[in-house]
Length: 298
Ligand code: GDP
Ligand code: MG
Image 1: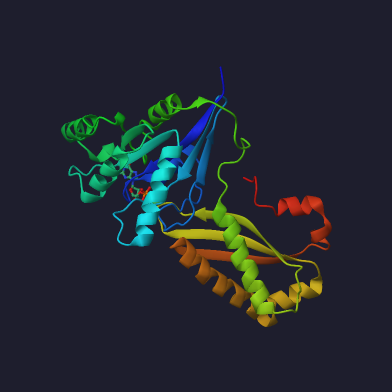
Image 2: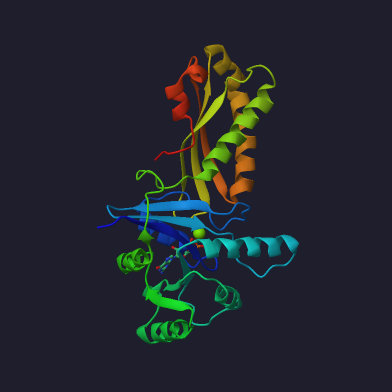
């Protein structure tokens, strides 16, 4: 069997269950902060791998009716992204009424070239009659290729949806190592924020020899809370003492101001644990440097 791969993006109003579906597909609770305002395009959200497929789920900037120039720009960028992927999943939920948010997205999708599959989520909350009318409404739209009902929360029909998605993938390469489930660009940014605070708090006391490794970063399910574990790595024991400070005061200050900035970035509460470790000569050691790289990691 030929190897297939491709890019998929999920759009839909907030709270329809996009993150829940991602978790259900990838099977791990990873931090997915896709509802937050974004400026970057084509960010990888997560990657699905099996023996014959690699499906890369991309984050698309939110699609809302633009209120200003920046909004217009974001909508334009989103449209370009939608045209570049292999499949667009438009997710709606059990609401029987098609609201203005959905209407806007529907009109918007009309102009794109990529196939659109509508995913009706939360069918556990719909009776068959209501489901039928939602199903018929979306089926009647000519650019909609298929309509699938699922319950992301209960993992119902998610397997069927995956088969449908795979049907839209084409013969292609494995773009990313198969043990990589997300590139978590947030990690790199978070690490930079912490490093910047360390440097700010230390002024020139510990010149350059500081790196920050994000040990883990996970969104708590259904909560606007992200747990972060990070290690500040320095070269000497004396540096460690300086970073921690008297009665741990400096480290606390670093942690607090980093946390506040990260909360603003992610738009959710952050619970952060910070450690300080000494790794003599880490800057000269290639293996260690790789470890601190942001590329492929689980
Ligand atoms: P997102 O904003 O589109 O990413 O939505 P979330 O994935 O954060 O889900 C929003 C809420 O809907 C959460 O409270 C989920 O637990 C809930 N939810 C998601 N999928 C389902 C489902 O299939 N059934 C039910 N009953 N609730 C769901
Ligand atoms: Mg979400």
